[in-house]
Each structure stands twice: as structure tokens, then as C-alpha cells.
Amino acid sequence: MRAGDRGGGAGPFPGAGLVLDGTEWTVERREPHLGRVQLVKDDGTRERMTFRFLANHPQCLPSSRTSAAGADRGRQRKASEDLNAGRLELTELRMAHLLEVATGFRSGDPLHPGPGEPRAEYDPATTTLTERRPRRWRNSRPWTLLTRSCWGWARSATAR
Image (cartoon, rainbow, N blue to C red; front, side, top):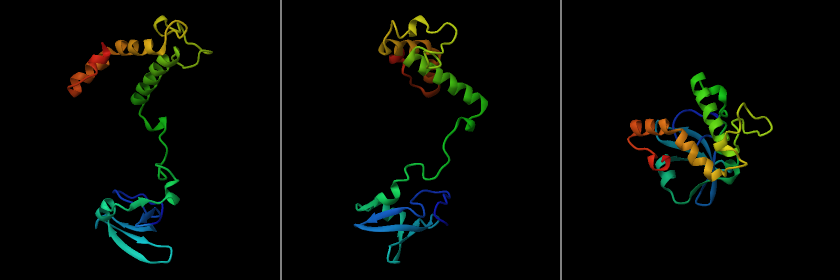
């Protein structure tokens, strides 16, 4: 496996740095089918260790040298193009609701209001954000009932 390859399974990826008992190691190779990795030090010393050993070792930490890349680990960023048409429409509607509560305008921009905006119950000139939040919950009550019926619990106390 080359560094940067993100094959299936869990555990440290090739190229990732680990600090084990104060010594810096680099993951050279993963063997997920065997539950182990091969580590290499800067001087070329190689060592095989199990995922279990690394996960339970109190002095095993990610190296600050390689953790600067962040949580994305080279993955493609999420984008609206990843959603199908129905999910995209639902996401846009939810975003419009959040923006309306936060700003009083579904577009989020008071300089470009939509027809009939701002609605009286969401007008930022006459209401506070704290007053607008419960109104959105009351207006989305069917969603709350659907949630309760699907999952057996709901935020019915906050929706009232």
C-alpha cells in the first residue's frame, strides 16, 4: 500500500506518524486482515504491532508532524452535487428555514428579500432570535410528530 491509499478498514494509515513511548514512528504498511501494522523509525528500524496493542497503549499518540493534515485525511470534500434531487430539495428547504429564523429572510439576505418577507413572526425588527426559534418548532410540528412515530421519541416538550 502506498502512502495516501485509503483502503477499507480502520486503524492508522500508511504515512501517518505515531509517537510510541516518546519515539516517533511512521506507519509503513497496514495488514488489516491480520490486525497489525508495520512501523518504521527514522533510522530504518522496523517493528510489527497489532492494532489492539496500539489502541490500548497509554503512550501511543498521533504525531503532531502528520496530524496537521486534519480530519479529512485526503478525502473528497462533501458537496451538494453528492445529493440526489429529493435530498437536495429537502436540504435547501431546511437551510431556508434556519436562515429565516436567524435573519428573518429565507435567503438570509435582508438586501434581497423574497415575496412577503420578512413575515411578521420572523421580522428581526420586531422579534428576537429567542422568540423566533420556538415559532419555527411550532410551524414544523408535523415533522416532530413524524419523528415521534418513527423513532418512538420526540422533542414534543420543546415543540409545545
